[in-house]
Length: 308
Image (cartoon, rainbow, N blue to C red; front, side, top):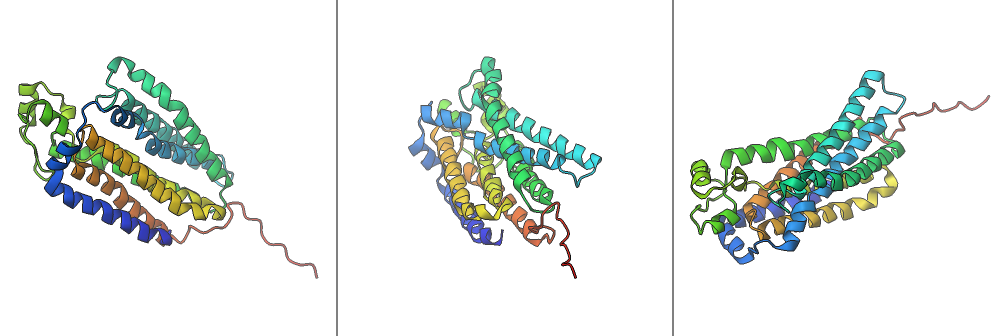
């Protein structure tokens, strides 16, 4: 965990830099990149968040595995099983809801199909979490799962959702569609007249949820969870750096395509990722300072005394 500090700060610095750049060049960057109905961009919009939501299902599988372990009493087991079901349900609900949403392959009649497509991936992730935790020898491993789950939740719900409801920033695609009738707003300027824009240009409320990027935040859940999975077993420790930078690469891909299709500006995707990285940084520091996270086996047998 301590060895992740430097890399978390590097990623934090990257997105802080892009936030600053976007603060001055948001409009110009989107004007250069915009590709309406870009097929690749729509595909990533539909499925780019799936790996991030699958990480929530992985945590759910971990909770399920803990619920089966002997050391925990019945009330604690029930809590673990409930958390497992909640994690799986949220993963399927959010990932499936993206596939045929207004931000991807928009078709309300096929919304159910999105859940059908994403369910097996989330379920497989749940089994992965179950397997990883069942093999772990760390005592109080539930603390790690809870910290990661809380970090992911704060990123996706209070973080992204609350800021969207405060700023109501217009999406670039709506600015273009109305021939700049909907005015461009910097990320720190609240769009107070968004309801008027909705009435005049017949736009849905979704077109005023640009800041921050929920897709980028969801993709960045990979950064929150994936690098911590190898710590469950010492032989996987060498995978931490590939996982954190692999998660970063995927997050950057999702972020780029959000600008490509005009759904977000550079500052939007930067803030979405920053929320996740800050939550990861805080979670990492919490885990570092918790002395209970030691590699002792959960069911450790007392050492036998040598015969006299």
